Every structure is written in C-alpha cells, then in structure tokens.
Amino acid sequence: MGKAARVRVPRPLSKAAISAYVRYFNVDLAEVDPVRHQEGYDTFDAFFTRKLRDGARPVSRAARTVIAPSDGLVREVLPIEGGVEIRAKGTEYTLGDLLASDELAREFVGGTATTIYLHPRDYHRVHCPCDALALEVVHIPGRMLPVNDAALAREPRLFARNERIVHVLETMHGKMVVVMIAAFGVGHMSCAYRRLEPHPQALVRVPCDPPARLRKADELGVFHLGSTVILVTAPGVHPVGGEVPRRVRMGQALLEGGVSA
Image (cartoon, rainbow, N blue to C red; front, side, top):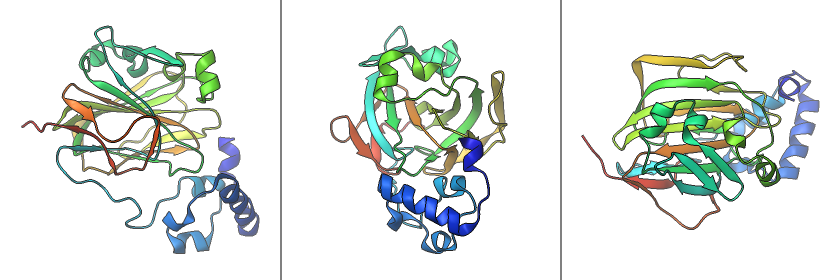
C-alpha cells in the first residue's frame, strides 16, 4: 500500500481518487494550503502528508504547556508505575519493550503515557510537544499490524510489536519521549531532523551530537499512511482538558508541568 501511494499518476486521476477519499473520510480541506491543493498532487502520499495553511493549528505557547504532538483521538492517559508496565483495556506492554530500553523506561516511573490514535482524515505530521533538545532517535523494526480496538483486544502488546520511531527529548519538563507507531498500510515513517532509512531489519540508534534544537511545534516526523503516537512524560507533568477518549488537534494544550532550570 505504501508503494502504491507513492506511484505517480496523471493529475486528473489523482484528483478523482483524492476527492473520493476526502468525501469518504470527511477531510477538512479548509485547513489545507488552497494554492497547493488546487495545483493537485502527483501521488496519494503527497496528499496524505500534506502541510496545512498558516494558522490552521494555533499553538498554545505558555511555557508550562505541553501540546498535543499530533491530531487524533486521545485514547488513554495512563500512569507509569514501578514495574514500568502500561496496562489498560485492550493494552498491556512494558515501557522498556516499547522504547527498546529498560534503562530509559525507568526514568519515567511516576510519569504518564498518553496514547493518540490518528484517523485517516487527520493531519499526519508529528510535532515537538514543547521546546526541546533531541538527544537521540531510535528506529525499531517490527510488524505493521492494525491498531484498531479489535486488533488490540487480540494482541495487547501490539504497540511494542509494530515498527516504531522513538524521539528522545530533553525538555524544561524533564526527559520526554514521542513514539511514532506504524500500522497496517503505513508505507514508512520519516524523521524531520535526521535521515532514517525505511523499514530497518535491525534496531537503529542515531545519537544527535550535538543535540538537535527544536522549538515547540517544530516537526519531528511524518507518517506516510497510518497510525498512533504515544507521548511519554516524566513525573510532574499532568493532563489538562476533558475526559478520554477525546479528540485533539496538534498545538492544543494536552499536559502541563512545572518549568525547571
């Protein structure tokens, strides 16, 4: 599916296919750069990874605020307990398995893991949740199984089995991790600040030396079709907003914490 999405097709055919997709999934075209959309797209992937018009995503700029890194449905905001296990209805995995590092996982005991599911209608670029230094990006090979509720019920450890990219960040709120998880149909995932080859056969760790300096809402990566984001935060950062599940848009306040030097 990923290869098919990158096949160049004549603009009239591309426009017809994209129009059908927009109608079926109720994509909000008011958010899209009108000039770019009017020009059309040579591939479906170019449309799926579309950028938005200026101002389409207001960003909460308060220093204490941690923003939603992506559009989507907040499925869960779960505490990370002493055994670094993440457990909820339909979900069960260790943070060490998810991050491919038990040592890193232990730094988040007492923190939270926020899971955001991206719908096909959503904007699929992932952004930095606050001002940060990117210390390392880790590309973990794995499956591309569906991540819907039925699939999670069959395989509770699904998030720790699928291919994923782990962005390790140092922030004013302590260590933070943004995990991009691939799913069925995902062509590949890309990183905005370091080059990664798609679909690695073995785990790849790319240290950032010097660290990549990122501002709140700077781009971290892109889903070329699919999937799910998990934001892992240290103790002292707390959820804001309503009950879950609930929809969020990139840039709105998701968590809040104290600011340390």
